[in-house]
Image 1 (cartoon, rainbow, N blue to C red):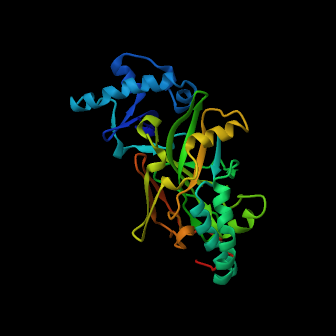
Image 2 (cartoon, helix red, strand yellow):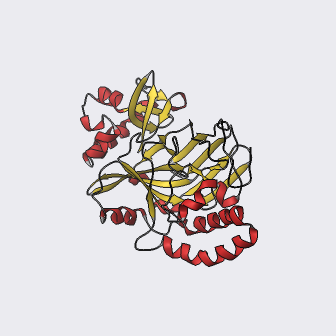
Image 3 (tube, rainbow, N blue to C red):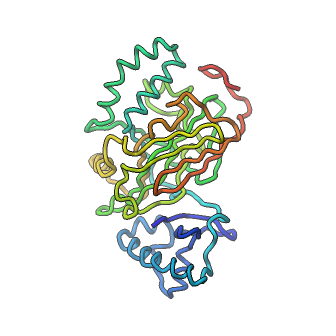
Length: 330
């Protein structure tokens, strides 16, 4: 199933995306003369697994037949609704670094901008093996993201005034359920970043201003249940930046599987429903990987096979833009 939150006719709905329609669970329950309180919201759904999944699946099975009969009362053409984040207020947002090739690419670009080409070549060769070891370590690195800065499909990403190098980061994200049903589903995660302030943070307390700004965490467009994604590490990924760049990658490059990510966190703290776990950036699909940068007013499209396409808008250059530590772009 593809679960979604959306706005239509001035109301917020929780429901399904099926055959070009956004279908509220309330409409389906009214049609079937049933009542499932656990389908009131994404939060009650997560708290009530597996019963909520079973009831949602039963209702979802009815939708194609209704559409075929022309009985679409209470449904909305999905093109005409505003899609909200699959979980607007996560319990927490934690992000791993599980793609060593992205780490290597990123370090090379950062070093080139910080110290020049020669330093980039010398230092990156020394760090490359360490990056690969780190990603597959029994204690893989992660940081705590800003779970209050979530945005959805077609929303505008944040651009703080202290960066001239805003960037996207396409990732596979896990949404946690209850014990026994730890993975409620998968979704696209755009971990927006401020690159020209990131390097000093990587050798200090970790990501801070480079990650924690408002409207910096794009999620969506759907929460896709695990039964539809038999192998989450075999998904093709395409990121389009306006009409200028098309970057391609794959979830095949993750060093560990999603189940291990969840198990790792359970060894640290009690995992509650509604935690977003980012798996790490898809190599080759960021400005930092390629030293190519998004521009004001562009539309970014992030497509994951089986998960849909997350659209994000790049805003205009912020007022009072501060001088960059790197070459000034604007």
